[in-house]
Amino acid sequence: MLTAVTTEQSREIVLKKNEIPLLEEDEVLIKVSYCCVCGSDLHAYSHAKGYEFVQHPRILGHEIVGEVAAVGNRLNEKTIGQKVIVQSMQYCGTCENCISGRYSICIYNEVIGLHFDGGMAEYVKTNIKYTNKIVSLKEQIAVLAEPMSVAVHAIKKVEELSEKNTVIVQGAGIIGFFVALLCADKGAKTYITGLKQDELTRLNKFREFNLLTHIVDEGLITEQADIVFECSGSNAGVSSTFKQLKKGGKAVFVALYEEDSSIFLTDLVRKEWPIIPSYGSDPTDYEEALSILTKYANQLEGLMSYYPFEQVGEAFQDSLQQKVFKAIITINN
Image (cartoon, rainbow, N blue to C red; front, side, top):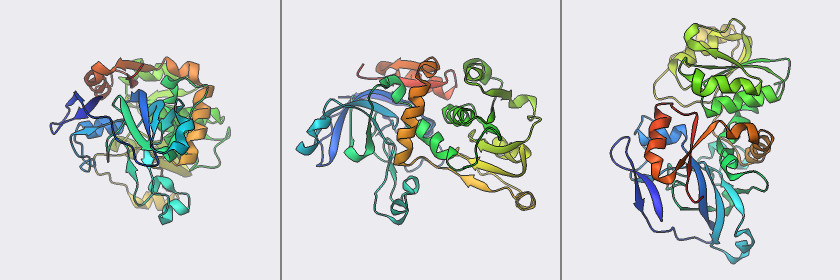
């Protein structure tokens, strides 16, 4: 089968032939239709700080949709031919965090495409419990279930979200956009911020989703927020979070960072600002994610950029340079 593999050299990904993976008892083989380029893929591709655990060569890809082509157990034969998405975080199910329902921070959690080979390949295997069936949703939109599940997980951190709230979402990437979309869907007055360079490829399109856009190069938003979701992954974003927040407001950190950040804790104490981290998603977040994607499917399709498998290198470079909002690799389609 054809695969896209990172090498020992930073920012290099090549197409090469590999064997179709052999299945264990509870695994299924998926013929991949689409696989997205995620921020984590870009970090691994660039050998970034915090991604030293990713061994190279590695087949990247954890935002995956495709069709079940084979099963390791005859009891699962009814799933052959089904369209499915793959959950990225592959939890153990037995540690204390899993038992308490906190699967995203499973003690033994591993991410497909980072800890082991992923979906930038003609075929990928996974345990059947990490799949969700899709029915009427187009595969090219269903492939967005993983980033949408991350947004769903983040929104659950703030139970009071409603039309009474003003929300600022920092960061115009796919996670920031999906978080903002969910906030607006719940009726909140929602700002999403980005850089001046984001106006053409991102911010101007977000306004079609009832979002208020703001360019951070022009200064702070004059209105303070009840909740700030930090999705930019920048030190500047960490700093502006607390400049934009009302006393008693909530700061939810969803992004991952390549550099250390400093926070003056006295301000947090005096203004009772809780710092709420949100990492990844739980299995239950995926069904809600698929439901939201179904609701906005027609609008979302126009935001994405699709690349044939042979242009995987271009997809990575365009994503790294932010020439496109979201690159999706077309594999068996």
